[in-house]
Length: 182
Image (cartoon, rainbow, N blue to C red; front, side):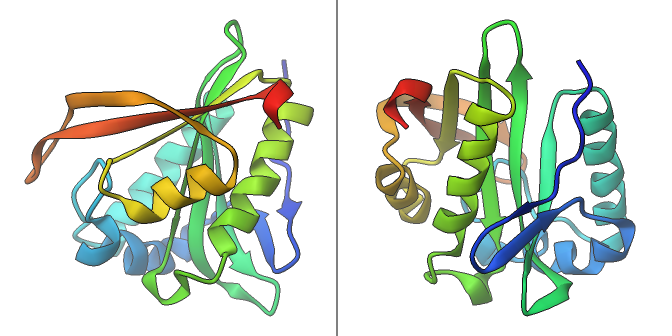
């Protein structure tokens, strides 16, 4: 099944395919210790590493496994302020995982809730999934709050579930949202 890289909009944001010229903006997010505190990967060390990451995301999209949008404010579309993703898509099981991150200068403005709400609509309406998972570190209060705002249900915590370089084994809380709950 073919699927386009659909540009999505919200009240304040445009979600579009991140391009190599956005690698510097991505580095400002993924190279920051505070932003990466609860991520399942260590900070990136260079813009070049971000270019490689963008190429990897493009490859995953072309294989129909993952969507990763760059998040841009409508008022400044030249700067990518975050990313949002639907990944680990299982068409057979009609499930997908939701993820998002934002440059720390844009936290606590309701942007991630706005963006992820639009992506949830896309997943249920355009992709036909039945289940969306949101996985995060249990201490990540921002993600836990967003999960609650969007109606996700905590299913449990996978203890010492993921090995993250320079962090060790970390826990992962699993939340889900079903199509008929949205």
